[in-house]
Length: 308
Image (tube, rainbow, N blue to C red; front, side, top):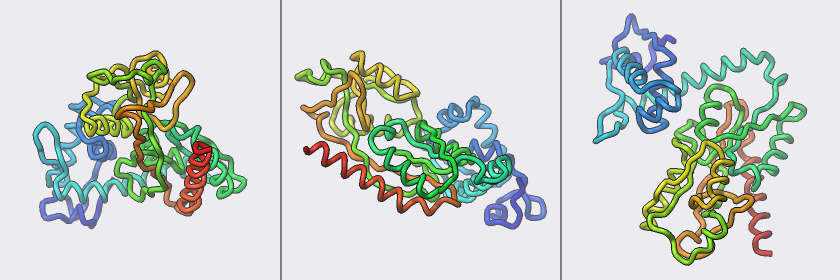
C-alpha cells in the first residue's frame, strides 16, 4: 500500500521516496491491534501471531514512517501524538481497503445477505426488536445473523465480514454510535446466589480476554472493594453459563439462563448499567436512528414486564 502526499507521509521525519511510502498491510493490522487491545501481548493473541512478530512489524512501520508510534509507560505502552494521528489515518485506510475487497469479492452487494453481528448477551433480551428494524430497512435482501464477542465483531466489520454490529465495547472504532443502555446483573447458581455472605476472594467466571464485559466486571468489583479470583473462563456464553451453573462463581451478564439466579442481596445486588454501541459500514449509516429507537422500545417493554 502506498501513501503519497498525505499528512503522514509528509511529516518532516518520515522516510520516503519522492513523497511515497509503501506500507505492509500486516504491519498496519499489528499497529491497530496494539491500539485496540492495549498492548503487544493481547494484539498478538488476537492476530494469532507471536509477540516477537508483532514487535518486528512495529519496528519496520516506525522505521518507514520515521517517527515513534508508541512510548513506554511502566510495563505498558501508550500512543505518541504522532501515533494518535497515525491510528486515525491508517485505521481509515485499512478499513477502506478491507471493505472494498469484501465488496469486490462479493460482486453485487445486494445479492449477498446483510450480515448483522450481535453479542451473545444481547440475543434474548432485545435482538428480536432490532432484527425487525433491520429487515424493514434492507427490503428483500436476505438477513444473516452473526453472534459473537465484541472484539471479534469489531474485527469482522473492519474486514467487511459484517455490515452492522451491536457491541458493548467498540474498541475505538471510528463512527461508533451509542444506541442506548443495557442493564447487567450478577448471576450465580441458586445456592451461591442465596448465600448470606460473599466469599473472599470473590470467585469470578468471565469470558476469555480481550473482553470489555470481563474488564467491566473487574472494575466493578474493584469499586466495591472486592478482590476477584478467576475460577473459570470461556470464549463463549455457553461455557460461562456452564461454569456458573456448576457453582464455580459469579458472572456479570445481561441475562441469565437455565440454572442461574440473579443475586438480589448484598453488594452484588445493584444492577450495572453500560452502553450498547452500533457499528455500521459507511453505506448503512441510515440504520442508526431506527435501531436506537428499537432498542429503547425493547428496554421499555422489559422494564414494564419486570414491574408487572
